[in-house]
Image (tube, rainbow, N blue to C red; front, top):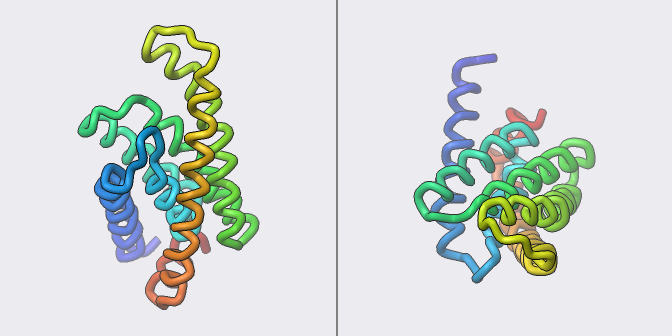
Length: 169
């Protein structure tokens, strides 16, 4: 792989991480993080599944350390980023990426968050799934709508199409 391509990939992932860290707390709804869903979908379409997951993991760790967010920053984003990237890779359509984010964050991430939060808080509550699933699903729906409008415009720009070809192929 060309050194310039490697450097471009590192820069794009770094920019995506920075955008996610900065935008998520600004556009946060209590108990929901729709901007993380936006960034996961954009990363899934532009970066592909591997780099999208790397972005989600690094972002989640930084948000947990700097903003004091519980482990939900990881459980909610990693599965969504993977779903958005893998479904885009095989479906080649942003709607597939949005659906992957919905399944990954909205369903899988919310259900995995239950035992993680029971462990984190030390409290056994049978209704955690009732708290997390609607919020995660709501955030993915809001995030998908925003990501759609952002991606429609980004994919009109030739440089973004070129970056996408570098990552996704």
